[in-house]
Amino acid sequence: MGFVMLISSFLVLPKRELVLPMILITLSLIIVLITSSSPVVFWVALREMRAVIAMVMLITLVGWIIGHRPYVKALMALGQKRITTQSRFFAFVAVLTHLISSFMGVGGIAFVYEMFGNQKKASVSKEAWDFTLSTAIMRGFTVTVLWTIVHPAFAYVIAGTNAPLLPTMVKGLGLAFIGLIIGVAIYLLQIKQKQISLDVTPDLSVQEGEQLDGLVGKFLFWVLFLMASILFMNQWLHIDILLTVPVVIVIVTTIYFVSNQSLLQYKELWLRFLTADLGKRKKQLFVILSAGLLVGTLKQTGYGNVLFNYFLTAVDLLNINVLIGLTLVVILMGFCGFPPIPAMVLLSGILGSVQVGYPLDIVAISLLLGVSVTLVVAPVTIPLLIISGLNGRSLIENGFRWNIIFGVLLLIVGLLYVQLMTLFN
Image (cartoon, rainbow, N blue to C red; front, side, top):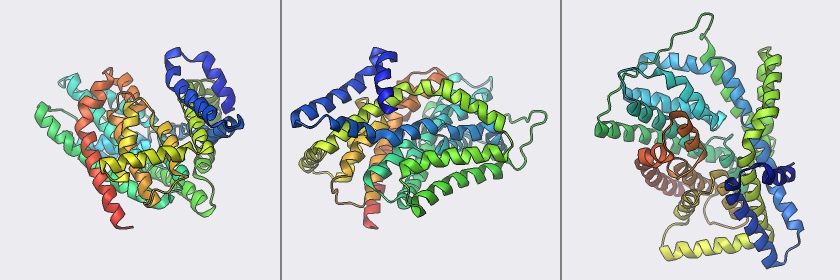
């Protein structure tokens, strides 16, 4: 299936979207020719991404649970009395985005934006509203990659580096919590500088026949059920994380709709998924498959070890810590236009076959920190494309201009956090 996707993408995608994948494929060809390796290497390399493809395609199923009933409105109603200042509103939106995106992925960005998009009061300027809402959503989403099992980048780092799942999640969650605090603190400084004052009291009027009682508890139950099922299959049944996540997502989603007696709606969602939603992921899957070819080629030919030795030499010349170097390499790749998931596939694929000299969970957090910073400040990322499409502002404004201070501070604090964690191992 991956091979068919790879070939068909050449026919349907615009030429400008083929540039990065073609560079990756060309590099793979050059490595095979230089090393005089067998063409079988390409087939082995293509299979490198078989689990990631399923995960990327099926991650959207979790959104079906969130959209089935007004769970988010119930969460908003729970916090309505506490949203009395714009800083609390910012924190609430950021935490809500983080919670939803933790098992809905990038779909959580649009979901939360649509929930608050019509809440702007007439007295509030569009720029002030866009700045508050968009930065809250982006900062809440950015740190989900540090610990969320269903995020493809996190899952592949675990699989590629063989890092222990639970310790990595716990340490990543700690850094994510710090990141949320940093996001709110930076916002408080920015609104003083920009002299922004908002009326942020949300309008949470309940529609006729709409019941919110008990939905928060049910929502939290399904979140915990999803996470616990993934942990159980991975930790106790010893099933690979890249296989565990998509399988559990399908099982839990099916159980949800069966238990809610909504099989007809479940069938309609599957039909839409197969006929429309998959087509929207052509570009993302093409890049992932191309990256898989390069990663597999590097691993099969031994060039991965050679590249990592060059990396270690550069780290020694610059006199910096290896963990810091890994984080900076991920950010550099992001600024060069390399998407986070392929970057994780490439780096973790190389690191999986070499000895770094640090605990694997710390190595994983170092890589994920680079992804987290990249998502919010790199020139082009999928989250930035989504938020720019929603508020109509440029990628530079939504990303670098509004969030560079947050990104730099998260990087500095994150690097210190990683170094501190090494002391406890």
